[in-house]
Length: 109
Image 1 (cartoon, rainbow, N blue to C red):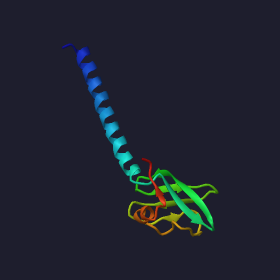
Image 2: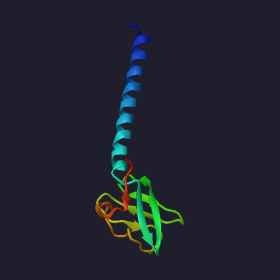
Image 3: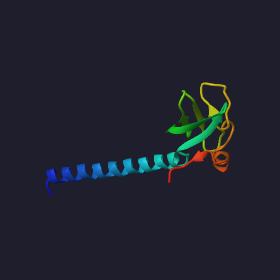
């Protein structure tokens, strides 16, 4: 095998290994994202709001956003909290399990 062929093989192996590592990282990130509901329905002052999953941070905190600049966060085992406001609503203080039990959590199927 010539030096040129060895170089080509090494480049090919590096690309394949990199692609496998990238695919594994993407699947691992998707697992945490998939553990949160796509949307959460909350009532605040007589108005129903749909909060949509916007992001999941590296620490496992999910951020949900609704119209009127409302936002909230929750973790897999924590309680829902408002972001940038002291306003209360029907979701605040509930865990994901409680939101699912009450029918407020909406998952994509």
